[in-house]
Length: 116
Image 1 (cartoon, one colour):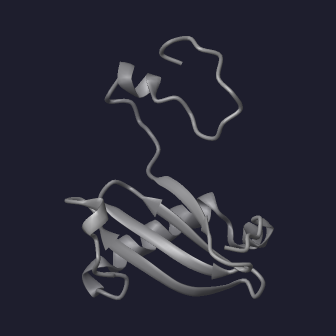
Image 2 (image 1 turned 135 degrees about the horizontal axis):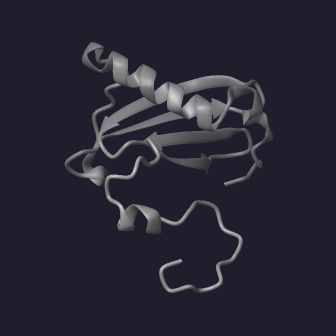
């Protein structure tokens, strides 16, 4: 967008408006999907401070496990799962709500299945 190149059909949106106005209200989180096997997916959201992941069985439509990591200092060094830490209970609920809004549970069965 910045160079006025013709863009291909890609996911996401240009951050150009944010570069032009750093105080602009922007997305609350970034999201990703990670397939793992034939019927398991990891759904993740991060707000720049926390990273929350839910591992789902797409056939049974059940939560296998969830994770919450503090990623403020170094994203790659976040190793302590804080999901059951009472101090992060409100954060877990907030991140769960963000994930549900992006990936509603009733639609999670429709994600492509991969054999990895």
